[in-house]
Amino acid sequence: MPAGTTRTERDLIGLGIIVAAIILFVATGSAALTRLARHLLFGEAAVDTLLINALLLNVALIIFGWRRYVDLTREIAARRMAEMAALQLADTDSLTGLLNRRSLGAILPRLIATAAENRGCLAAILIDLDRFKRANDSHGHQVGDAVLIECARRVREMLPKDAALARLGGDEYAALVPFARGVDAIAQAEHIAARIGTAIAMPVECGEHTISVTASIGIACNPAYAGAPFGDAADTLMRHADVAMYQAKKAGRNRHCWFNPSMEAAMLARSALEQAIRHGVKSGEFRPHYEKQIDLATGAIAGLEMLARWHSPERGLIGPDVFVPIAEEIGVMPELSEALIRQALIDARDWAPHLTLAINISPVQLRDPWFAQRLLKLLIEARMPPNRIDIEITEACLTENLPMVRSLVTSLRNQGVRISLDDFGHSASSLAHLRALPFDRIKIDRNFITSLGKSHDSAAVVKAIGSLGRGMALPITAEGIETPEILAELRKLGAFMGQGHIYGLPMNADDLRRDLAERDLLAQPPLAQTCEDQDRHRA
Ligand code: C2E
Ligand code: CA
Ligand code: CA
Image: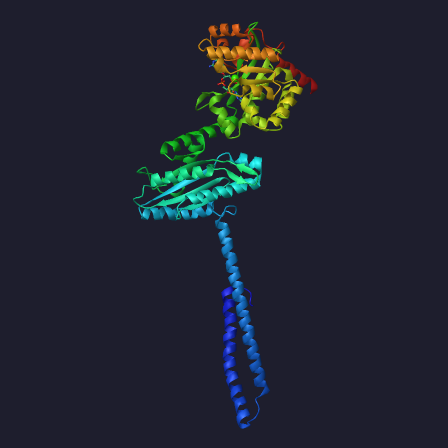
């Protein structure tokens, strides 16, 4: 077969050979058969052997040509099937057999156009499983896959026949549901989304495991949502469903939410804030401020708690309640905290050596198995004795991977770092948390202290925590002391270390330095100076 011949050409050539052979057969065959008949009937000369051979060759050619034609046809059919299978594979999600993101994207504009032509409506329903990663991690990928397949099946069951369903990747599905003109699309889509949510929330039996997952569902309708048109582009529809899904997550998961335009504004503001935080971390806009920790028995400053502040050139001074949760979510908290600690260790060189430095650590930092090593390295670099450092962790740190947190805390304690349990009393399981790790100090949740004098309950809780501390030989800090009345009340309830606005607001490094200088609480000679001298000596 000549190079470059296409399959159809080859197909035709095979067919051509047969046709030519048949024509030859008819031509030679008719002459040979006539002669053979005459020879037999009238005794004329025998048939020429050459003609017989030509005839046989012709028959062989026809058989050969026919077989070749059949083989080629079979080969072509097999190839066509393989091509179709490959095409289907590229269009479907191999795990669930649903459409994939690419193929959904390909049909979406057509569905929108059809809905517009028919003056109907197309609803996009975006379904994201809640905390699926946790189920996947704890039961293994096989179980995770089975859950994804079962969820796909349940969602499909809840959708009308003409709806398209895709797995967009991971644990995210998208359904496109067309509604005819005159149908109450909003009510119907709402009903479908609710049924999908309920179906997914039913436990999934998987071997010996029973897995329970829920879903957050976002819905958007195009071209009309609640009577207000908002464009008909495919990506707009999907983005709106995505925004609504995000809102469902934010509102507590396991629910469905309709898109509304104000959500998008909030999302844009949030994403601008995320961008600004990332940029701020890179350009050193986050600075440590310090709050005094007072020994209530003597009134002396015992240490300083480092509290992060964001000096944003555009937004002004921002507190950690705003940026810490976002920094945790977008994964920059470890980098942010490390930069703050590095700076705090430099600031602390100027302070009298008996003053301790308390550092708040976020739960996300304790997911890093090298956290203890990283912190100890910073202390070594700054020549800061570990026994001047007090790590404050909240009860939230104890709710995941406790064995690893325990091992990190043990490494730090072995080096002399102290560990405090911050915001104690905040959760119902505080007492259990107290036994989870060998803490060196408890800090009573600020709300109990600020409400002292106003609430009998708070006084009772503070008193109980006071006696608990005495019983366990655990020192206790009361933070949030705002007024002399609270301080007087506190003194009645036990022996505490104290913090709060009564001793001044948290201050930046320069203000603190001046404050400490007035109290004769700076290092003599300044430790920073000593370190520089040592460096020069070594050089
Ligand atoms: P926290 O560790 O419980 O810190 C004490 C908070 O109470 C601080 O708020 C402080 O300014 C405030 N406060 C102090 N005295 C009083 C008072 O008398 N009355 C009232 N109403 N409040 C008082 P801030 O600085 O806004 O910090 C909030 C939380 O942010 C902190 O709570 C801590 O959990 C977290 N945080 C701060 N800095 C960092 C950090 O560098 N890393 C991490 N992971 N978290 C941080
Ligand atoms: Ca704290
Ligand atoms: Ca606290």
